[in-house]
Length: 294
Image (cartoon, rainbow, N blue to C red; front, side, top):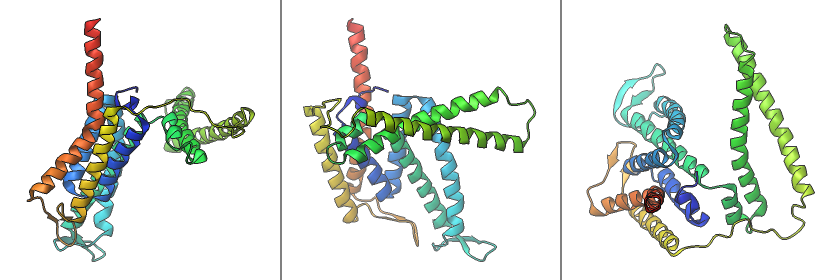
């Protein structure tokens, strides 16, 4: 989708997504997790549609339920014992709360990676890392492009197999058909990889100087946003290491949010997460105004 933020400079895009994902994963503060999940979900809904949001939500629910169930069973730290498992290990409230926090962290990470994959194209990856690490950039860009093709091919093969599926089928028949579909998709992917390698070789890959398909230029507004991202990350890191945004799940749940600096840091992180959404809304408003003028 060619939204406002998708049209911005790749450096701004990668810095924003790395910042949002890093803060979410490295600082497991409940307020950060809630802000990250709500704003990333809002961004997906407004910019990419409710269908894409529910697709991501489906994955989030599956992973979240697994984490919430498994964590209290394998982690027995915490002082608030709710009951005892058949093995004799304690089932603690802190492990349950940590399981919910870990599930929310995973959901936030999935949301932001979904946004990154939707916004950043293979051209952006090659532009950023092509001169520094050309092989790595090519590998990442091909992986991003190939994942979508693999999914589409799987759906087409599955649709074709449905034409030969009987009305009454057993569980064994369904498993057997899925194995055939996956085998067909893997075979297609291997053949496609060989064709891609032959095509690149015949076109003279790495025989001369690499050229750029797009020549991005940093605008003043993008430079200001990049500076804001760097400053925001510095402030959040300083507040975290200074324990102004202190939190602890074990052995007892403890969250300190009674100082003004912590609220300022939360607002800064919220503004950071709002950058792509605001960019898309401004672009949509600009197009709406231009349409009304015409």
